[in-house]
Image (cartoon, rainbow, N blue to C red):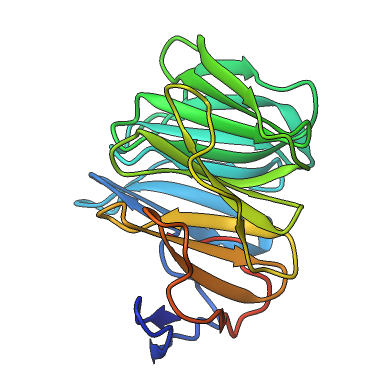
Length: 236
């Protein structure tokens, strides 16, 4: 679905009953499902359409592509405690992070692809150097499991969504919360995403609603609106 960012009204809809469209589009690359019956995702060159490599998503429940198209980060099918950072063009393993003592739920790259943030059911957020695997910072959210996360476009903030039905925005440098928790959902917050200018945050929930927030004030922009597709697990 395509939504108006101010009103929440639907202005477009596309049904894909057979072959799904690309999952991700990054500089020079596209990730697409070409064999849905085997859960296979192909990484292809945008210009030539040639498949560079592929992997089976039954082994990787969550994956994110860095905005610069250099890396793919993936965690195991059932969550797991390890993050594998792969070269997006070759599929080669770049780094392996023993990221959390508990199951990892959230992944997000900074806009320059240099940092990777992870969140787990231990309630912590950890920020890593994607190329060296060094842990830059760690903080506890003092809440329940971190289920979703997203860097702001400037890389200075991280938004998290939790099982406690709330979203929150954090300062990356200090690990301190910015403002109060963003409360308004009646279910776990499963996805969060910043607008390109960093002024608006969208949160999606198991209550099947999406809420838009003004980042500066922490106030909702209008009323929640229904996703029409059930639980909101992914936004971009």
